[in-house]
Length: 221
Length: 257
Image (cartoon, rainbow over all chains, first blue to last red; front, side, top):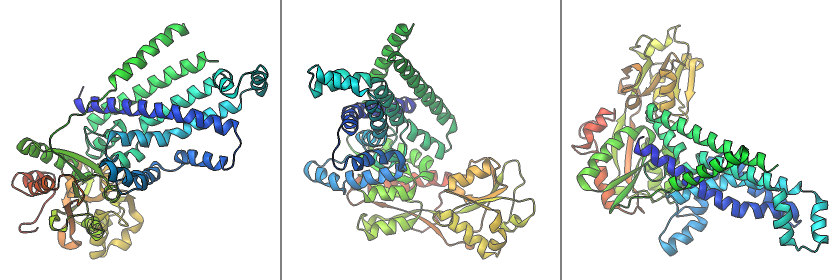
């Protein structure tokens, strides 16, 4: 197989894994708080988390440039201090995938946590478990199916991320061209034979992950 | 049964994690060149020659000119920007983002009248009035430079109003060509650079019929390696680069800078 195809396939996987890891670490607690706590501005936070799901990825990408670009609100602070800019690095692809895929995790996990039987939660409290113990030993295990579904959806979305990644990470062969970006490049430069190989590879990879996910979701019934 | 499956899937996941760790090769000097999408074939070829001759690594970033300009405004670490239309370079210059003395033309765009391979070649724009030509693709003249040129040429010979209802507007020049190649339209007006090597019959449209499509490039002010970027720009317009540019339809009249 062609080297550049192999590179793109590996980069796509790497970006998706790293983004998904961050999504699990931040998304599950966020979903828990949104499902179980009442606080001021809760729905506003939910909307902010969900927006990247409905906005065109190019708009999300534009926001990311405005915030994290070298002249951006946070990007400038980082650049002035360290001389580093995230733009055009593979970290930018991770950031774009993270932001775009996070809502899928939060939405699915929140619904799953909300549907956990209140009686079981109350029973746990009655038996003397504290909140953290109840969350870890009762609520999250019962919501496992939804959380796993959220992880899989986020991963799949991260693998296929295009618009926001194109804007923040650029489309640099051998550096930031994940499979969707590489396919776009090949298509616009009329190199359909290589594009076909990558399209088929991406389809097989995504199908394989969904297959694994289905097995896991079935098992946790 | 399920147990067996899940063991396999753990192994697959494990392999996927191992397989997915990419290593990035570090090179001593590298430049990032943002280029309009239609330049991809030409710049890849020139970039490879330049790398071989100088040892400077050329990283190419392709996209639509508008998107690339937005990245540069956002502070993307770009060293050289080759725009499809010089107006984008003008606008970046107005914002103080390029080194003005480095701006130069890399091509003057030409347009062609193209028909699908299985159709007869059309030699004159007037042929578009023929009844068998039912749909004509052009790039959207509202924002695409080649679309503006197509509209201007049709206006110049007075057929624009009569053809308006036959027009299909494409997002960019590549998509315009796709419409023609696939036979979705009976004819189209596209760029010479995408016509070459395409699956169409095409005729060059005389350049007097439309305002000049000037394609410019410039070194970006906050780039990391401005000297190397300037070197690459000179290389594109030099004796090694020009023949490759010409091969892909990017022509520069003699004596123009």
